[in-house]
Image (cartoon, rainbow over all chains, first blue to last red; front, side):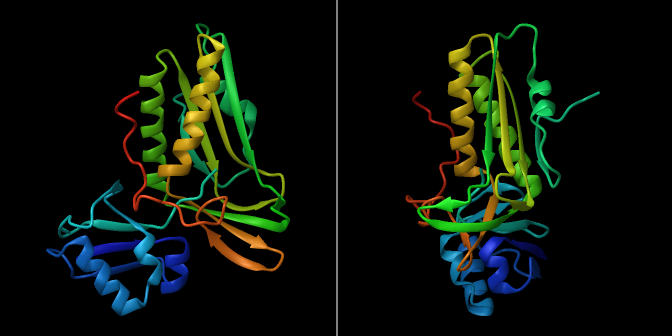
Amino acid sequence: MIKILLFAELQEQAGVDQLEAEKAGITVSELKSWLQDAYKLTALSNAMPAINENYADDQDVLKDGDVIAFIPPVSGG
Amino acid sequence: MEQRLFEISDQPLLIEEIVAKVSRRECGAISTFIGTVRELTHGKRTLKLEYQAYIPMAIKTLEQIGEEVRKKWPGSTIAITHRIGTLDISEIAVIIAVSTPHRKAAYEANEYAMERIKQIVPIWKKEFWEDGTKWIGDQLEKTPYPDGAPKIGEDKDD
């Protein structure tokens, strides 16, 4: 089981701020495709993945218990 | 009492508290930056702002910026607090305080920290415009990450 965190416009598109899915073993990129199909998250293409609070790559493979966050373009300050 | 130098807060920010965190007897300068909510952006009126953060990662990335600053400007101490939640016009969104032995480094380090916040800290601003609402990626309302990714590491060559 992995936990998926959504923020900003992704959260608004999905209507929820987090999801859980049995997706251990796939890559970030594969998870993105699944989310785009399942939740119509068009803003995902602009978002950076972060696994367990560290920026990650699309090729990284998800492990059971991982928390993956999709970080839309940041706008602090 | 142990003070946290990097915080995300849902309460109004107080400049004196953040300055006090970096005050050192061996320092001769403290620079402060106060980011406030702007009403007019290129003629468009903002009614209020809402900031959201991925709090644990925001604190972690602020700490990373602190590490970068301490390496680049030895002898410096930096504290940053970013506000989240709903903010009215002119309210304080972020405060950065940097103390250094000499003033030039305090100015430089402070500006560097703000630039890095805008690159890597997972905080988002939702503008409530007079004519509608929208999450925005940057002050220019363009999609950032021009290279497809934020610049995560510090510059290796300077």
